[in-house]
Length: 212
Image (tube, rainbow, N blue to C red; front, side):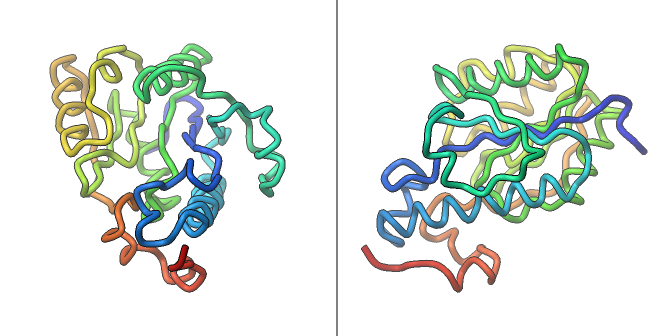
């Protein structure tokens, strides 16, 4: 089973700056430690996305891709860039999804919080879009690690209480209301809270700071 149209992976990312990224982990890791983890997760996610070899990999970032902070990161030259822009997470994701779909590609929307998300997961989601309207990977915290689409509808992004444990259920409900077919994969761990740190890959754990 192969995707019927080119697939673009769009990674939503905040700059891994102290006090901006992974702030809920500051009590466990300290301000700099949380930023260091965010930097590691960004690089790890990029590596997995590129390894999937599905097509274009795009970083959709805040602050703007023109901000000097992004020049401090070693980003593969093949990675494309875009700005998240204004609005809540739903508005920003909707703009990116619509832009990609109108350009004739399917889209896989992911973040940088899920190191369990592998190239195999990404390839499976892309292939699923050859048959289904949407591909979905829920997260154990009630959100989702991946939303893949070959069609657009604004209701998938509007009026959702982001960063709550009802995001996945609400999104799946809206997909059902649209009458769209969905192929889901098993739940994966997100790294958002201190208790999630035990789920980090070993190669990351050994570099973590646990001080302020």
